[in-house]
Image 1: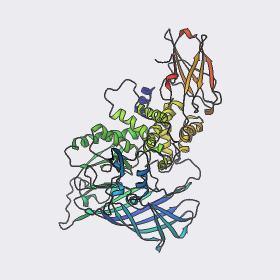
Image 2: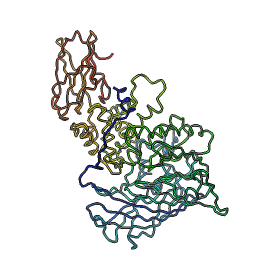
Image 3: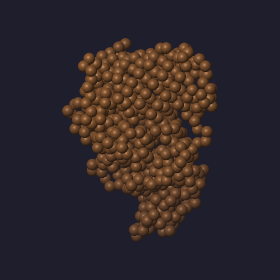
Image 4: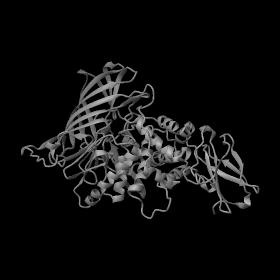
Length: 629
């Protein structure tokens, strides 16, 4: 089954195109166009800027307030992020110091010890709405604005403000002077309008988790020491003035001798974020990728990493081609891989990743972050509420891509690229500490459980959906989902309805049980009597359709399919070379189910529930007869 998945993926699934974008009647989303100019002092890591934001209220509501994110305010002693580090059972190791006191292990938040010149902050001044001064209030990482005049439905308003910022010394996605020596990782650095959608305002405080942003266009000018090179979201508008490897071939760039700074001008259309990294020792390489996309690479001039970063470049082009084929075309003409940050984090048209890695790790993190362009920066789900959609879908497609672009050494035949996701999920279930995937990203009791739920269980959502409706239908669903909902804010229901449209199956039960509960799947072969009557038992709460494979002593094989009546649909035979019998459905309320084989018990060699291994049954020891010893 795994082999058939990979064959299907690598060949690509041909689909006709759908003409409608976002098929939900009455759908709307807000729009925010940013113009920003800032000047960065590379000695103090402080910056000053201005922002003009034209906000369009496409909602049916009249707005009396608006809210902005001030992310850098989280990097201060006593902030919610600081307190969260102190109170959570397993704090992020990158943000705590560990030491012993009286032979006891103690951890301490690094944010707590930041001094005034080390903290992060964003200070707002001179806020105006359409030229009139508006009242503002800062509450942690949120700026609350009481509007001078309400913004009526289908109308616009222009906000202007000045901001002073300081880049925090503590790296968490953003920050200064990373452990690898990158000077500036500039993410979450500007006053960012909070999202207002059909659920209302999403003015969540920042404690280090996920994001939700308003679609719009960004026009950004950054003035910085002329020795620094910038990699960023968007397209550089003045590349022949800047140089630094951007200029057209053969163009000579001559900066005035007295100039100490350069102003970089970027435009990023149709995005919901803007990020950049800068350093005075970057190497900048560029290659052409699939569909005419420029791939840029910014990394430290460090002999320990140069070889791997050179080898990364053609692999990135392969990854882009894989995602274009199996999801849909990357809609921009530029993408940048930038060394910086504290791991890997996706942003509009770029990613910031740490660079001192093995080649496999470097390609792996790039695969994941590049895949996030499709699942978060074009399909912009609310990450805070549905983090499993962007992280899980991204992990699924990047695992498949890595299996092709960087196939693992010593790989066993038919070994699944998703096995680690299944193993992580089973581990989480066995801890007894799992929380539903509908839990807000900030509300998980443990970072480890959050990670497994969003990445691993999110991956299994898709692979197991392939078991439920067929792998070809699942891959068609991904493509149609991308086509229908790109540049919008799709919800879990949107994906479910897409899968229903593609397959014809009813799938509400699947979405509810898998994502909104901690119900588990556990089916067993309870008994086989001498006449060949098989008794199955449902032990877990979550219902599923069942594929059953029977092998007889004479070598013959047959399969059985037990539909889940909640689906009102039957899956095509996943093993067309094997005779299949479709049995009556197994209604959820019945704890057991019986059917009879054509041959008696003595002639049965084995009976297996789910030979594909794609159904996440939490106890597979009872899925086989005879029981494996």
